[in-house]
Length: 112
Image (cartoon, rainbow, N blue to C red; front, side):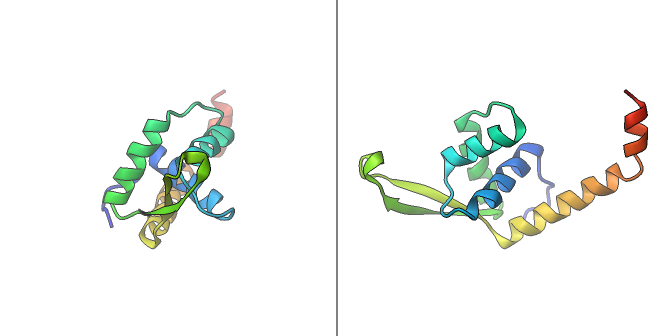
């Protein structure tokens, strides 16, 4: 597992994978759509694919070739899942952010 923390976009990609995994195999296009739907911001497909490769190198996600599909001209999709190390890193990242936000909610409201 990487000792580096997770960047914001890495977290978004991993969280999208976790959300989508309840529905079956997860691959690039639905990840993009999930992030856009939940955050309201546009996401480049390439940014997701580059991030998935980086996360896989860190051991935080794993991938495999799915079954070939007719809609893709017989090509298989590369499916992904968050590894146990990735889930642990997500929890640690959330805990760190929660600790940093502790006590700031009231202050943040007054700053408007």
